[in-house]
Length: 396
Length: 135
Image (tube, rainbow over all chains, first blue to last red; front, top):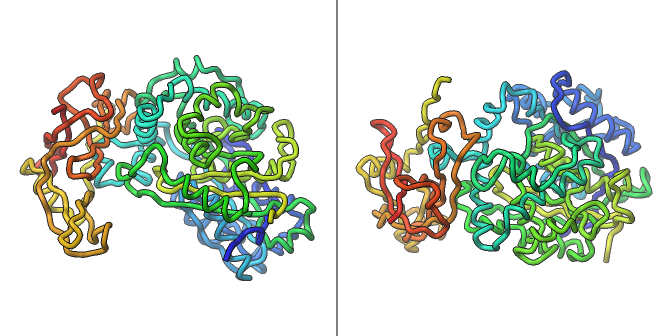
């Protein structure tokens, strides 16, 4: 049984990402939810399920979200029958949507609000605490933590091997940051919007060789949400539902050093499943929201999902073929490198951006006539590879 | 600035033989008695054939660098004093992969596919880490 075309997203919401010391995390959650519900056109009491994904900056806040705080905040104790956390780190966006679609298709729920909120920029005490938090989150405390593993090191390990196997240059890797920034310049919700150059990236501080400071995402506060319902319901609320057409995923490791191929992960297999389910191929895709967090993962995600041959992605980015107005609109919200890394929300923001593009609501960065989008995501230390295909129509 | 103590491995009961051997400066891994698969890190169940008949073997201690990085800035607190240091994924001749550090050489000299052999770094009385140096 396929979920192709069975469920659709009818509303989205998002607050700007960045440093917002005076914005409580619950404000990001409520505002995002409010926007998504208003955007969908449903009455709040139509919602019968809320899926908040995980928040890591504060365990107390996370426990409140997973025990129904949003149900009360939105005044929905009379209609929401279940509040269930779905959390797989950065791929939570894709897992939330897939699970929501499955529940809708089986009649277990009718209108589901999926949401995320995080306060990673101002909810923790220092950037060093952020580094320390992410030197243990999803990292094996027996087999990796004792050796000094942490997230920029994790990215560097993949980058080094990828450079070795494909000949990709530091300049090409830096071009990913520049490309994402080009899009972020057009995105009012992005944390960083000032133009960026390759020289600027390559002269920034070396973190874990060859990854430099400006090739690293920046932790951010943020929130985003979307409303999912059946394809049939969707037509009553909008003339442009965004259908879930296909999804594919693989889990290729837990402990990062156990990954058999740090230059591929499981995207090729995930993409095949997703495209087969959708009845589409890479050439049909108008918008590619490729998960970044660091340039290396965006290159790997882009080429393994099938948009170019292995090892050729870097040159496409360097030549500006991924910029606004070019052949491959890639990561059009600016990604975590420019919109900011809101934990699991980095992936949610990217999925929301894919939906936004298909809804035709991306304003200055709108990809004209976009019908089909591919969104990738991955969680933890890149333990899974997720590919989600969305569309404004259901192809045969 | 106070230096944070190094994190020691948070062990599991079934991995104790590994850490005991490391204290004795031996690098051991598991081997499945049923399918012959070499296993690292230590498991309760063979990840190749689901067998529970798992034994231990001593490795050659030799392998190659699959990939590496030189940590120059923004290390976790406990490792700030060590910068620059090399984190690497080693592929042992026995076919398993493990995260470790490359020591006893200039970080500039490390490269992908570099042949390395195990050496040991004592953290405290309880824990000794297997690390690697050029062959």
